[in-house]
Image 1 (cartoon, rainbow, N blue to C red):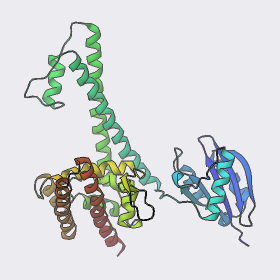
Image 2 (cartoon, rainbow, N blue to C red):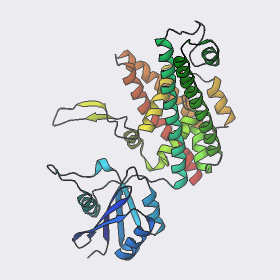
Image 3 (cartoon, rainbow, N blue to C red):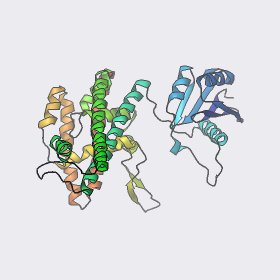
Image 4 (cartoon, rainbow, N blue to C red):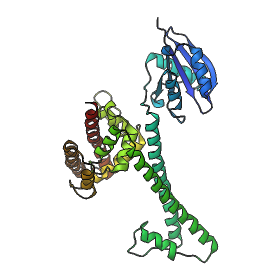
Length: 372
């Protein structure tokens, strides 16, 4: 008879509903406790020896703090993917107590899928990268507000002026004026938001540069190695590494599925039907991969910033060879799919999926070098 206890935790900002599934078959709720370290410590002491406990909870807005707290107490914990928790057909009653019971039962049955949990330093890097991503979105909104405001009032820049260059901003600041004080105040506010967004992104990018310098040698080597690929400079490389962590835990196809770039499928019998991409994986990873994939519409070429990156980072010949192979393969793939009548977005998505394979190849090669 198993002595293990499987503990399901339904975690919220202030409370945690607890349920225990004994190895013998009994499932019993233990009520609700505050989401505080002292309460968690008391719960662990009440449930018995930590070696007999197997806890789990769903990934969500509370992050990994509970996981780290339980790990510090010596308790085994899995953070599970919410979308992969089994759901009974016809079950229309949802409460914290029932959710905790379902987690405990499914965990005992081995029906839950655990997600990879980063350590505190890796999670800090991920938050920094996502803060920059949020800053870029806010900058785009601020620029749209200002440009549409100017358009509504018939203010257009000189013909040889590109939007959002230094010359364009000087034109807005020095030459755009209104007679009405209300419009002047509006212009000043919109322009201030554009400048504030630019300064915010600059601060975050400097912080990212500092974080890269303090990275563990293996992670920093992977970040540098990925920059051998066309379309992947430092920010994109750091984003990929922060979202994936260890590449060795994936097979290439599993990594493509994790990104959500694989086709959905609804096949039965002799009928095979594939649809659009699943989009069920990591959206941050998917976004930067698709952005990088656009560069492979151009013919293979090694020069400019790409050549400078490879020289400055002193990358290995093996890494550069994989990157060159990627350029030839992905450009050929782009041309072939375009000639077949696919629209550009579909073509770039397919190229991005294959680009992940080359990213995996470079990263795993570097990780293997550190393990040797």
